Amino acid sequence: MPAFPSYSLRSSPIHRVLKKHPSLFGVPFLLIIVGASFGMQSFTQTRYDLHDQKVSQITREQELGLSKDRKKFDIREEYFKLSAAKDQEWEPKRIARPKGLPEWGVPPEEPPSQNGS
Image 1 (tube, one colour):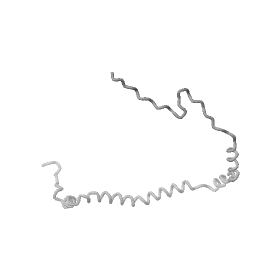
Image 2 (cartoon, one colour; image 1 turned 90 degrees about the vertical axis):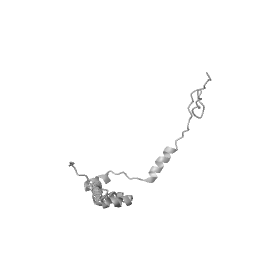
Image 3 (cartoon, helix red, strand yellow; image 1 turned 60 degrees about the horizontal axis):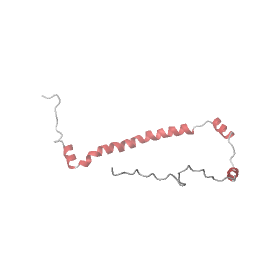
Image 4 (tube, helix red, strand yellow; image 1 turned 45 degrees about the vertical axis):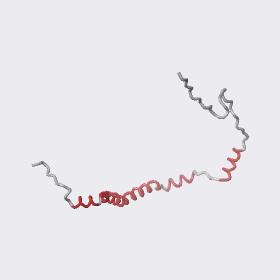
């Protein structure tokens, strides 16, 4: 007598249904994936809610300290700063190219010539 008895699955009704409709083989897998997604939804939402609380939680003292040192922003003042920097007189100058280099880039390399030797 063998150590483990062997049972044939060929005679089971599940095997007959799967043989007729092989696409049903993936249905349990899909059900597990979709069910786990809905089951994990509450855990995932709790995780993001706790993270949001940590990030947005700030004490009143910290809030007052942040607003105390804040610099006033005026868009017109920034515009005048940028336009004053733009009014500087400057011209682009070309640099001297090395000898043998054409004006617009690197010359194409010639393929090595092959002699019929």
